[in-house]
Image 1: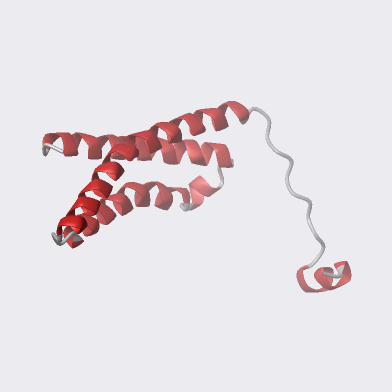
Image 2: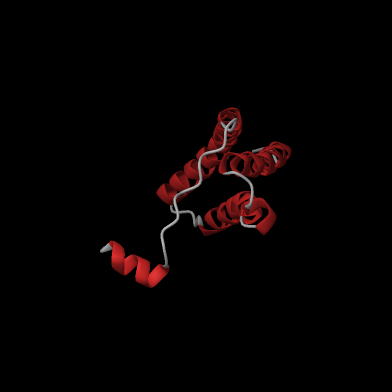
Length: 121
């Protein structure tokens, strides 16, 4: 795009803000929290996959399993995503937002695993 056209349409360009110092540790911690969340979610995902796969192979209807696992997954990830779009949280640096969302997702996923263990899954 022509720089003069951009300036005419949107005003003068602003340079991106400089990255904040001291965010590397927060980013590493957020990555570790999300890695734990994804590892913990791999077990229920594997169980749902196996139930759907073997259910479909034997001709058993698997719509309920898919529906409930989708609803549980949306609930587990909907809360952290909704939290990150709140205006006070959007003002935080990106690594801090990821850490906060992971801090909300970790107890939700742990609760899902405890619930599954109590149901005999």
